[in-house]
Every structure is written in structure tokens, then in C-alpha cells.
Amino acid sequence: MRFKVVEGPVQMAQRVLVYGPEGIGKSTLASQMPEPLFIDVEDGSGHLYVRRFPTPATWDLLINECMAVAEQPEDVRTLVIDTLDAAERLCHAHICAKHKKPSVESWGYGKGYVIAAEEFEKLFDVLDMCIGKGVNVMVVAHSTMRKVERPDESGAYDRFEVKLNKHIASKAKEWSDAVLFVDYETFVSVDDSGKGHASGGKRVIRTSHSVSWDAKNRWGLPDKLMLDEGGIARVREHLPAMDGDERTDEPSGHPNKDLLQDMAAKAEPTSPARKKMAEQEEEGKAAKPKPSAPKRLQPLFDKCLESGIRPDEVKAVMIEKGKREDGQSIKDWEAPFVQWLVKQWPRVTELVIEWRKEHNTDSSTDVYDEDIPF
Image (cartoon, rainbow, N blue to C red; front, side):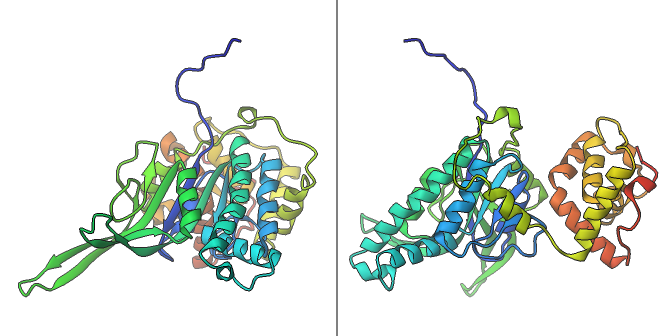
């Protein structure tokens, strides 16, 4: 039997676990990954301008939503589960109802958690199906601090870990290509009296293992990244945005085949402003041909047309945020900056909407009515 030999790195979708304390920016980090679709189990991403499925109320619905992405992955590059500890609670409720138990503790001797871990394997199996279809998967979780006892009895110390039962936490870390711990960098100084004082508080991404936290990556990242635009970009560049021809063949015959379209339709934004933007976009497409721009700038202009955002609004926001100098024409924007804007588009859209509110303006001006700045 002959086998084909493949040499060199193989591009494939990535499995990423991000965990950290509440409110530090885990969901925001996930929202900056390539074309994310959120399954907001905890219902905590409402402040983000992202696509999302309805919040799953049951374990079966969560599995079905993930299966829907595996069945129809065309418009999804990154599936985000937010959060994994909320998913664990759904799993516990499911097995308790199935076995007619009041709580996961009712089995005794930790047996309930073992049963839950076996049930939780179903979620990882479906997420692996998404990976097989070229969809990156990022799971978000909270952190907790646990005391670790040394087996040699040399002492005990506190350690940050994923806020999951040890059986599921172990599987999640093993399953992931990267485990990223999002934390506040704090420095402690001691005064003359021996009293410690904490300072700092900048947000960082820990990417390597330490006695104080779990972390790993297979991408060669430095041990610490700042949780800012630059650090998020370093993470995002390792999550491939695979085109359709790079993905495997689509499955067929699954009973949930049409679930993605049905749920996506229910999850569409319904605010008047967004409806107006969508209507204007459709009217613009029907009324006028799509103008062209230099190849270097065309992706940015395409995003503007898709979102109902004028290029001059993007320019104004970038100047206001100190990313561009006042007076610099868009036609002079360099290719790396344009690529960065396109990758950050959900956040750019949020900033433009905020800018419109601050300046008492709206999107009533058709994008095509503006002078094309290219």
C-alpha cells in the first residue's frame, strides 16, 4: 500500500480556550477574531456588535446550534462559545433531568461530575466537526483561584485555573491548540515598614505555562502580550480565515441542516438604525453599480458598502482615535493599515456608530453620493 507524503506545515482551523476574571475583555477579544459567530450561553455579549445565535436555554439546543455551524459553515470563520462554564451548567441540568436527580451532587462520591464529563464530550465532538469544516473555535471561560498542595509536602500556593470541574477542565485544556489566560498585570512593592502595595493593573494575555496559571500555545507567541489592538492582532493572525475551496466537502442529510439559516434569521439585528442601514445598502446595490478602487484599498471600500458606512466616517474616527493624522487622504493609507481595519471591522463599526451619536449625525447619506476617496 502506498501513502502520499505531505511535507511542511498544514493550515487548519484552531481550537482556542480563553479564560480570565469577569469583565476583563474576554468576549471583546473573541469578537475580534475572523468573522465570529457567537453562541452566547451566558447572554453577556449584548454590548458587542456581533452575529449571534439565540441564547440556548437547554443543553440539547446548544449542541444543535453547534451542529448547525458544522452542517453549514460557509459564512462562519470563528465559532465562539461564551462561556464554557455556563455550558457546563446546562450540561448538569440536562443529566439531572435525565436521571431524575435534584443536583449533580446527588450521586455522591463525585460520580455526577464523571457522568457530566462524559456528556460534555458530545460538545467537543461537535466542535471538532466544525474544526473539520475549517471553522476556528474559541471557547471562553471564567477563571478561579484554587489552592495547590505539593505532593512532596513542601508547601501550598494559589493558582489560577479554568472555572470548570476538573474532569471537564482537563479535557478542555487538552483539546485546545492554545490556552490563553487573560489577566491584570500587577506589581507589588514593599515599603520600609514591610507592607506591600499593589500597582499597575494593565490587561495582559498570558500564553505560556506558569506555576501560577494554566496557559499554552503552539504558535510561538511570547509569554505575555498586552490585551490591546496589537496583542489581539497577534492572536488573530494564527486563526486562519479559510476560503470555501480550502474546506472539506459539506455533509448532507442531517436533520438540523436548515437550522443555521432559521436561527440566523431570528438573530438578525432589529434596531431601527440597523434596519435603515440594511435598507439603504440594498437600495444602493440596486440603484448603482459597485464602484471600483485600487486593489490595496478595495477591501476597505467593500466593507463600507456592505455596512452602510461612509469612508469619510472611518477616516474621522481614525483621526479621533489617533490612528491617522488629520489632513492625510485615505488614498495614502498604507496596505497593512487597511488590512488591519478590515480585520477589526466589527469594532470599527461600533466606533462609527458611537461617533455618529456624539456628532448628531446618521447614515442618511448614500455611500455612493460621497466622492470616492481613492
